[in-house]
Image (cartoon, rainbow, N blue to C red; front, top):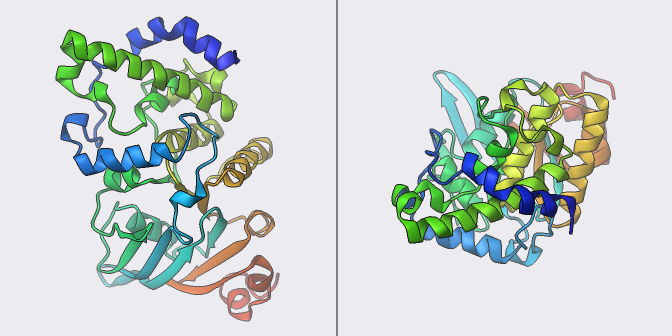
Length: 319
């Protein structure tokens, strides 16, 4: 029996008292009673493609060859065009970098893809399905998760509770299931499974020793790990990471890179925004360059480094 299984077996009752199904869903989450049948079906399909534990291979056959396709996205803010007819795709199982100078439109593109803001025009496809009009929680339910430049967490809850709240469509979010005896038993069983998976996820990111600390007390690097852990807990097929290494010390950066490569080898797909050119060139097999809202180049790292337009627009004339 693994350490995480032992902890889960011996500590389940105590933990479930603190993270019981009677908690209310945090702001922005959709309760299970409000979740659509389509959403539940999407979640079940993803779980069938992966064993119920973090770090387990996603079945690449469950994805299209290019799970993410962005076509002619445009977004204006007043008189400023933040994203200007941007088009690109991301191959399944790949580690793809998205780079560009400040103001190039990278984070806005992430926001458009994940439903945080609506585009003025253009289309986003995930696994050949148009997800352009979906809300963020609906996009996540399809299997597309993201992190943010500034890590977001529920500061007054523990690290363990933050991870346990991340999975979609939990039965305990329904009031009647939390209070009706026969339904509550199933809620407790489900949360026992969630607790086990949460410990496994924390172990995977080497932050299990912080499980009972309030998330608001973590360092910047630890918050990045927690946010990554929460994103992985949504059971995604693809992750969009927005500057995951910003403010992270070299030791933590190496650890985080190791986890990304492990997950990629197991079938996960990544699109990463990052300003560290060496990191992108050394770790990504493909790089997309944005400049003034447009896609300037889309090629291998070696070709990007030799692209004169990229050198002039982004690299300052020298490499």
